[in-house]
Length: 103
Image (cartoon, rainbow, N blue to C red; front, side):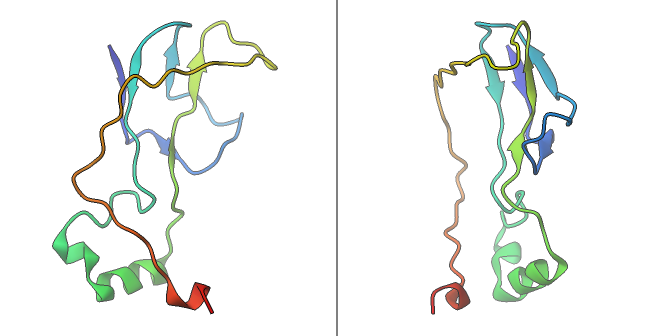
């Protein structure tokens, strides 16, 4: 089974971005995704207020997507059906809360 790894991310939905993988219609494949912080906050050291503030000051794009994925035979205007057979979550998650957003 083809595995499309989380290092194949982009931050835009854009038809001009080259595909990171090619799949056939009906093919089963696995796609890894990344969290909105691109995995930068997966350890206790990278979840401190100081680290998070520094990360925000440096800037990051956030909300990456894996792909694009080219489906052989698909044409512009076609509707594609995707069936998710399983989903596994990472062992660490977070809930972003920025007090200045909620005045």
